[in-house]
Image (cartoon, rainbow, N blue to C red; front, side, top):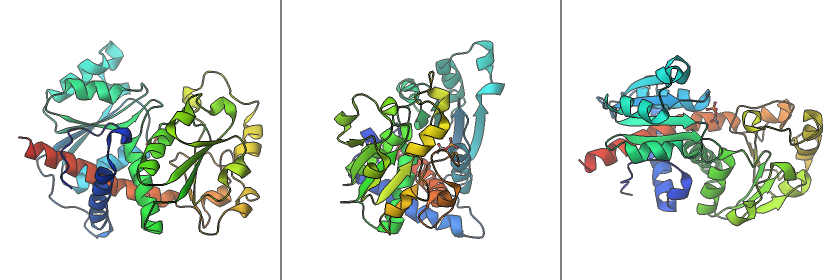
Length: 311
Ligand code: CP
């Protein structure tokens, strides 16, 4: 695959061939992550700036590790200690960072479309969307896909159930696009108050009952309730939510024997998932995190390569 994109803004933009190409590259880099010395000189002299306007544990750390393992110089920008507090806008912040000539900006922002705006204005810096509001989280969907492919080898024909706060989840949206492009069928499951009104337009089946929604599924992806994006509680109490939509030891009795349980993190144990399931034999939650480093190495490498080809 000849990867020529300048930016990675969403899975909606990518073809199946591009997704497969990114995952093949990630598989190649995952070997580096098992070595005693986890470093290769591939991106020596390149600069990556992580520009995170929202909190993150997994995404920011793994982009930083990915850059460092490829020998790039990695700088972490934290909005709380920046000139944003003096009134500087997102775009001015990004233009000033770009004026220092980094090769790649990795951006997380609470507003949908923030990375798209940066990509439009930054001529010679690539932008990776590390999560924009409730819109997309492409590197998460790619690492989820890599996790499934490592176990199941093939995604065509699989049945995926995404459970929880679908309305506010960028992970749900990116995974719906990604699994469909790779040939899986996707169901979404959750309370009506957490389901976008036009969700059927994405070609998914919609369920409001957990048992029915996960019946026969090969992949069950549990989501956390995105409290930071919710103004008015969409259910009477957390206990009630957990009772009807939390995955517990009773509900998993009906799962297929080879089903995989996924969660993008952070996990709210005892709310959307029982701790025994999060740590149990069906769970691939920590494999998702491990694969995240390799996927992000692949994205940094492919964008840098595309920049060199377009010089
Ligand atoms: N999955 C995910 O985006 O986690 P973080 O918020 O910790 O980056």
